[in-house]
Each structure stands twice: as C-alpha cells, then as structure tokens.
Image (cartoon, rainbow, N blue to C red; front, side, top):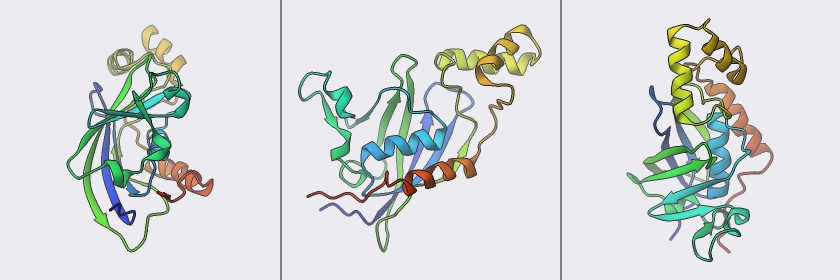
Length: 198
C-alpha cells in the first residue's frame, strides 16, 4: 500500500562536476515524478527549457510529449507515478536534463519518515555551489570555465566565459533561500497537488 504521508529526503548531485554541485531535498511521498522534475529544476536553478527523463531501477519515466516519440513501452508517463510508488531508502537513480548537453544528476534516497499528513511543499535543506550556466555546453565546458576563472579571471578566455555565464556568476554560491522561494512558487501555483491513485 502506498503511504503518501511520508517525507523523503534525497541528495541530488550533478555527475562529472568537480567540486560537486548538489542539493538535499525533502518532499512528500505523494509527489509525482512530473512535479519532482520541476522541484529539481527550481532547486538547481535550471530554466526547464529542455527534455528530461528519470531512470529508476532500469525503467525510464518522462513526459508524454517525449514518450510519444519513443516506441511503445519504452518510457512511462511521469505524471502517473509518485515518489512513494518508486522510491525506497538507499536507492540510487538518475535524472537527465537536456540530452544534448547531458546534464545527468545522481539521486540517492537518504531517508523516508512518516508524517502526520502529506507534505504540501518540497524544501531544499542543504546544498553546495551554483548550478552551471545552462548554455555552457555541458560538463566538459563547465570544467573549462572553472579552470579559466580560477587561473586568471581577467584573461580573454575568462571574459568569453563570463559573456555566457554573466559577470556576477560565482561557482561557489549556493542560494538556499532563492531555491526555496522558487519551490514556494511551485506550491502556490499548485504544481504539487496531492497524488490521487484513483
């Protein structure tokens, strides 16, 4: 039986980025995978402009639009599954965003705790470092940006990267308050409606 009154804590970390860019998120068991996509987008600061998918225990979950281009049975509709149906403590899975740039995220389910009632809103508990600029070109180009800024912030290469990233880009900055404000907006706009298995 699905227990929607469960609080899941997960650690989400971008693959192939050093030093690590990660977020620790608490969400309710009734959170649909489609909503979890938006939660991760808000927690990291992505702009939700590209396709995505979850890979959980070897099964792919994604949007109906993406699934329509795939052979029948290849990908499941993320709107039809919630956290309590697919997650368990200790589990590891992958969230992929923007298949061209291959922003892959490792998800590890750290804990599951029963709550008096289902959680109304996801929360970013902790994290580290800024999300890479979305249009940088993938993890290899982002690592090159980090090396350039660390080596000589005033070099021609660093100036070129800052045109993409913005003059105020700080790879060490993690804005938990801003991430949670974005999650509050999601809840306010009813992105996190409780799961109804009927």
